[in-house]
Length: 360
Image (cartoon, rainbow, N blue to C red; front, side):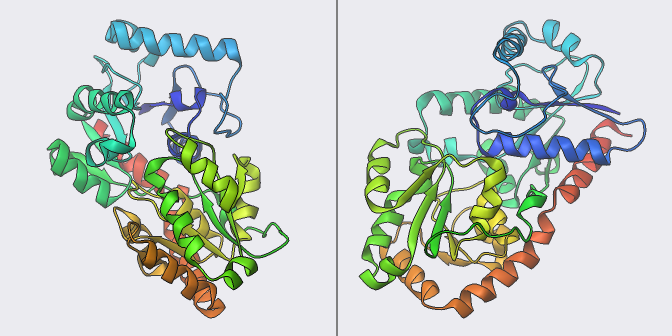
């Protein structure tokens, strides 16, 4: 069995999808059986390290590979088939617009936010997602959903056949499990993620401001992540009302997460919620939104709030920050639950999925 995974995200500035592809590819290759080959498209078999802000290869190499993708999207199978070099399966990413004529087609559904919350995307992003759904998802021989919530959204919104979609939860990098805390001058509450409307940081700042001065003096609110779409107003507030670290290098993230007194994630919608699982693996208590996949992923190992209620977020923050015992309890539960999100398990289930698609 030969499977080619679209790794175009390696060439671009990307967050969740890039991390997913990087770790997934590595573990698929580690766990592939003799005679099974896992390739990367377009001609990206070497991907040495993960950097969300930069391409994994040189400028000229990046341009050449993006040109190959563009040619395949314009000319279709005439270009795509030779690039796939006899693969049995092509697992397409959301920048692919054409299907191969020989390989069987699969893809991962990460989320349906372009349909559920179009207001938190640019028109170009929403249009690209809709094109991907029409040209790839609805034609695929099999699909992976990163959570059961995402699978049900795809069935309901895109009217995809349930039997064509397999829920396979994503993983968390090994470095997060029991990571050594990175020391800071005072205890801190941490958010990690792109600064964009969907992440709901405006309400988090409102809730933080509603806390008593003693708590805000005792704890620091730390926000880490790159600036995203439509973030200028939120960024101005973050710089005034919190400590902003910007983009944190991948190798520094586990220590930063592990050092937090509390991890807070008030997102309005998630397909899987990588930062939540990373905090759980690092033995850190989590406060998350009671929306989308987050209760499915964290189960009883997190505290939950209505992300549209400033008073509920503030009340939960106050309760958890005043109770180290409750934070310790949630941290212990989270660490145990994170064991279910090992990349090895994700890769094992994914290889089984690919074997079913090929009939091998």
